[in-house]
Amino acid sequence: MNVIIIEDEKPSARRLQRMLERLDVKVDQMLHGVEESVDWFSNNNHPDLIFLDIQLSDGLSFEIFDEVDVKSAIIFTTAFDEYALQAFKLNSIDYLLKPIDEEELAVAVKKYNDRSPQIQNVQLNFDDIKKLLTNPVEREYKKRFTTKIGQHIKMIPIDEIVCFYSENKGTYAHTKEGRNYLIDPTLEQLEGEISPETFFRINRKFYVNINAIKDIISYTNSRLQLKLHSYDEQEVIVARERVKDFKIWLE
Image 1: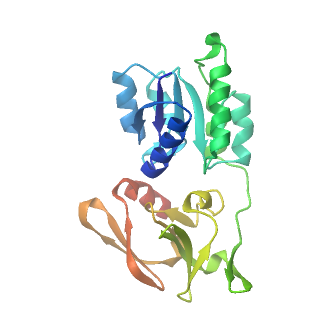
Image 2: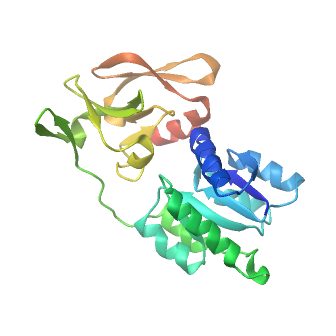
């Protein structure tokens, strides 16, 4: 079985690769963006199976299929959940919600292996999914987070949070009052829990609140540096591959 991973978050791609290797599935190639993937598919034999993230740093992964006729079977790895699932089912697509659970990954791989040879490769119609992702139904995001302080549980309203960041394997919420609180979700898990209109993941370590940005400064290597209200503990840098989407998000 020839397998590739298309995922813009390189740590997530490597984690998925390790999980697949434990299932005796060898990953032949890892790709990280739409443009890179189009070029690769245009010049290589297509794999049997693709593990495909939906949102890549340079666009939606569906744009790959607008350029190249890919007939590989697909298992989506996505943070989109309720409103997209029906479309996945209608198109007979396997999907794994991030963060990926190893047991669910094993089930998905088995489901692919159990398919008959006649339906290993499927020509898929993405129209329903694209409509739902570009015009999603109204959904509720978290209004608050909780953290344990000694024997007490503190509630942190979402509009008090300046940024989320990861440090020493923990995830923290930094508030307007300048406090840092350890919270349970990872940054990957936050993707489906906080409003994308308010929060943007600028790099592997930070989500920032658009209302907390007080200055944006040109930085080295085509990156941007952000100055946030009440946060000055470390540099807050928009990764080069996220600058384009970040500017679109600001508008």
